[in-house]
Image 1 (cartoon, rainbow, N blue to C red):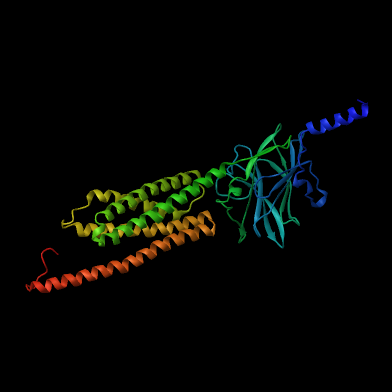
Image 2 (image 1 turned 180 degrees about the vertical axis):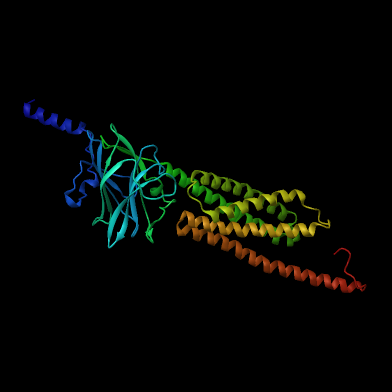
Length: 389
């Protein structure tokens, strides 16, 4: 075989064996004012953000440009956490509006779940600036003096609302906001993202589903069985077993949802939904009281049975009302899609329609029986209701 042919075959084999070239990062097309140029960039996996930097290892000086799209009129933030991979401990640079379409960078040493006040960071900072780009993304510029020998760092970034001159809380339900953190190797450019926020979001969704099914569906169904089916003689004692089954299963599922909520609260100590939490605790306490009250249920002919019924019914309806209210509050907190709210409204609406129809039917049955009993009473001729009443 001739040399040219051998050369062609060799080049073809090399082309096939060579690994595919990595596609150029989108951040490479970013442009900055003031002739700013950076050595390395990376597209961050959350919030459509990207980071550009130049790291002078000899001086341990890190010059950065962080880009992210804020909510309308909102803020963006980027920072390094020298001790952990979360929010607490982050030395943050936050770009906020200062009027007239301009922005300024404020340094925040974050020591808790509340933002606190602006102040000096543990890193020496300089050349802080911010501007809004033509692509709608806000740019944060700055230079940080890092400890000698720094190679890999924990980075955190975020976006949120700004109103009334105050920095508002970022979303605590959106997976992108919960996962906007990771590690960055300043030397190699390697970036890894955290994924713990997805677990939290799944737990929140689980918490919502468990409570919607238990307090919001099973308990109302059990109440319908107890109130209406017992009017039909043929449904006795089936109505009682259906009622008890729905309430006990609903309570068990509800306790699981309540415990999940307590666990989420312990995981997010800086985030408190007081009304939702307090209603949830009240529903759990009243539900538990109902369960224990079953053991104190007097017999039908006992003189205290009337008062026990009043207690049982009033507490039961209170639980259902508070449970439904709290489910809607939970949906608002989770910012669930409208389709899920609509689905739950339809489910509750169907139960309400069934209850309304049964209310009319059972009242008709009761009035008919009273009329028949009245005839029986008049036939006795003794001026008294039958003893069997």
